[in-house]
Image (cartoon, rainbow, N blue to C red; front, side, top):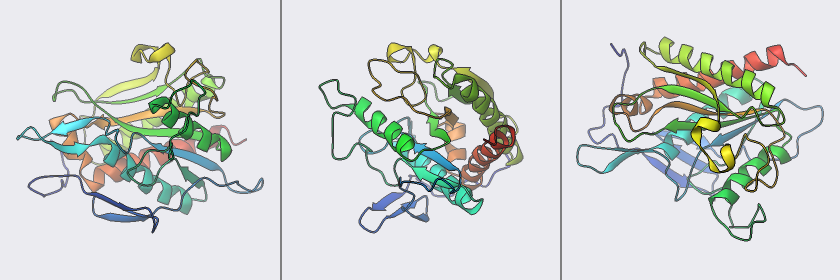
Length: 273
């Protein structure tokens, strides 16, 4: 049984409005200050954590369709609210979070050919995210996603890393911690039958040149590799009729946030330097 308090809106339509000029985003009824942008950290300052809310702007990511066949939940919105909650928690705990985006917008704005392949496309948006993490001298990179599948029955939680990354061993450890803590947090929030899809190396995803962009090795797509351990977290399935309802719930959004936070704490307990 799912012991959860889900949103009661009949349409369950994701609410996301942004005001870039004011640096404020309103997500699922919550208002966040959008000031966690990249900056040059002090050498003696707090630990910097790069948070990448996946997708944004024209790229919605996974989409849940309602009974009328229309989109009623977009992955990009869920990713952003979780990242904003996590940034608040990390700052309160003494970390310095840096987000790749704080509104529903592309990161590579204005559009530039950042990976030098002679064209401007989604790879340049991904390179912009890597560059933000590198420029901030982040110690970890967490790309926050939720999954999608052609079947509304598919459910599960997974975390992905790239063993081929220069810091693949550390990324593997981080992925295991994130996977463990996400599942524990979901269970604690009442989702007792959350499905463990594992902490996985990225080749099965069959990405171009065999690897994820943000947390993978240098390939013809990637001009500058991320300089820190990193993972891509797939908390739940936006396309699942069950898990899309959970992702609308603040209790689940905050549970996922807590899972990431605990994993970060666990990582630095093992690797303080």
